[in-house]
Image: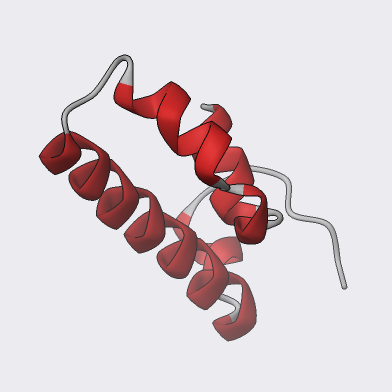
Length: 65
């Protein structure tokens, strides 16, 4: 979760210390796969919001910007 939160919010906070922490729990390939999946879902969510598709795709509250 913390990896996803950092990638979504301030991706530059994924520094060497955080990567060391991730490597304690995941292999390099797993970290890469997690990053790719997180990135895909972040991109999809943002695309749905800017296209208005979020209102048609789900009933989750999305604030108006």
